[in-house]
Image (tube, rainbow, N blue to C red):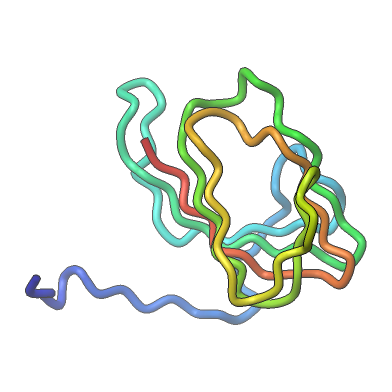
Length: 119
């Protein structure tokens, strides 16, 4: 596949552009990289960085919050999922099937994730 200059994007990995994740516990921050997610048409994708401070848990998502697939790439730190026997340590990947996330994600030491949500 040939990549043209119009398809290559550079973003800053610094502290600019981060904002609190709506509905998440205090300290959970997100940085949007790309977003073409259209829930009405049920198409597109969203890519964002997600930063959880030490001791943070993202509770189970309500069943009516969406019908997208979620892919999480763990870049730094570790994360535990409810019901899993072992925590994941970076680098690692976690796929959540079509529908809302149905497991609590907890990071004892903090972590940095890439989340890709898509139809």
